[in-house]
Length: 265
Image 1 (cartoon, rainbow, N blue to C red):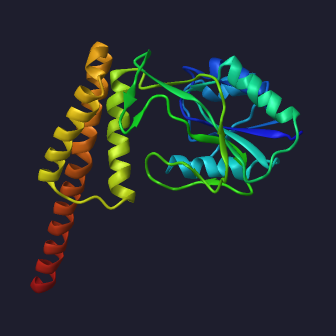
Image 2 (image 1 turned 180 degrees about the vertical axis):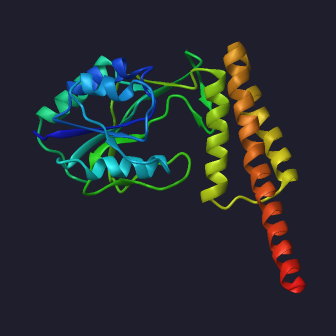
Image 3 (image 1 turned 60 degrees about the horizontal axis):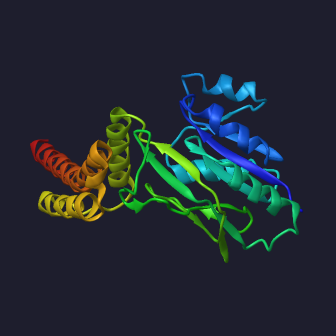
């Protein structure tokens, strides 16, 4: 038998918290909430469940999760985002796991996560297929989240197992949310990761993404939701190269201006 700390990240998460928190409370021996500056009712909702969020400014998802892990008093942690809703089979499996013998510290467990866009379950959302199976339950002495700017994951586990169930990942709930995340993800990617600055490469990549993630994946069968996920993949593939190119042009201009100024002096 072992004790488990649930680590939950929040930011303006009032939309789903009344669905996210209750199943997690039933499996948590300790509950750590890390909030990155919510201005809606997130804090009040958490406090209504007896939880006191800890403020930490956001830079990257993996880093934020690692902050939550550091606040855990238990070795075993379950890391959850505020748009992931655990169903009964998932909760029951974790309860049974906790009640058994303490597993080897290098073990990890993956949740069965199904993606929802605009309220509808989708088969793909760039750059993954749904469901996906991220490691979320592990021993914090053996594993941590990496610091990839986008699509981070847990590293350090040995053997991993998949938890049966259906974790609803209710993301991209509006068109505004789709384009907001598209912009923030591509900006973060260019800021923290080396991307080749090339408009031509962006165009070629976008065309390839359209065929792969909209036509060949069968997303076109899902009507407007498929159109949204196909457009998201296409724009994402283009924008990361375009933003890198735009930043490169700005840097060139800045260097040229400094060179001119030095000659003027």
